[in-house]
Length: 296
Image (tube, rainbow, N blue to C red; front, side):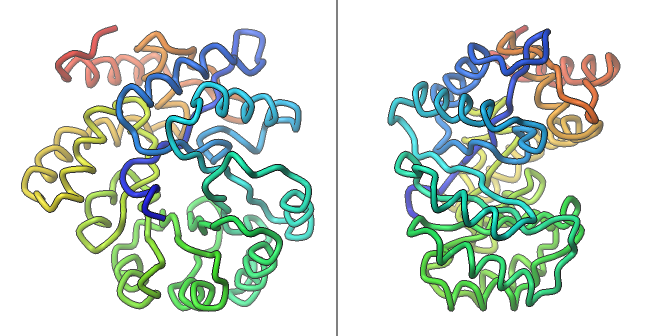
């Protein structure tokens, strides 16, 4: 997955005042990311509020991402959930030609055993010839994909080629990197662990903050991948307050507040999520003002 090294961004879904998908704002966000130098785009991930999107809205979002990207960057699509057979039907029927890989979250709510997680992803891998990236985010799913399960899947399924690791557990992340096959890649799924994951041998990040500050965030990731860790640490220190702020009232409320500040989209989210508070928006504006060249 050499084309997925570096900074990927988990795109938001902007909403209009009537609650509908705001296609024009989504195009502006995509252009902001492309112009800012990110390495690839992830559509229909957690940050897109995918669980509250209707099928027709998902189709609109995908058409918009493909159209606005216009072949500039590799695209990754999120296809995940807790109904294994239904996901297999999606993989059987959907045209995945525009996408370089599939990002698939571990089943949530059901709380499967490690064997259940293994069988779920083995089933999905057999239904597609696209590279499949596991997505481990225990804080949302309620279950952790243990390193031994990741390694077993990597060895048994040729097209399971990586994992987006958002456990925040660097010991676990390091174990996967050290033990998985050489052609299996680990991507940080957490802005806070991106540089640490690269130091341990990871290939980059799928970021939330990176879509708001693509130039600055991308510089941090490229610097880390180039081995200039002292500089990467310094850049990370500058960005850490922003990482904290955008998750303080939940994702994607914080990153949408950044886009509102930048004038790229509104800050609306869908219930049961709520828009960032005025206090948080003011704190985010202060953080954004600290970066040269970033103005409201």
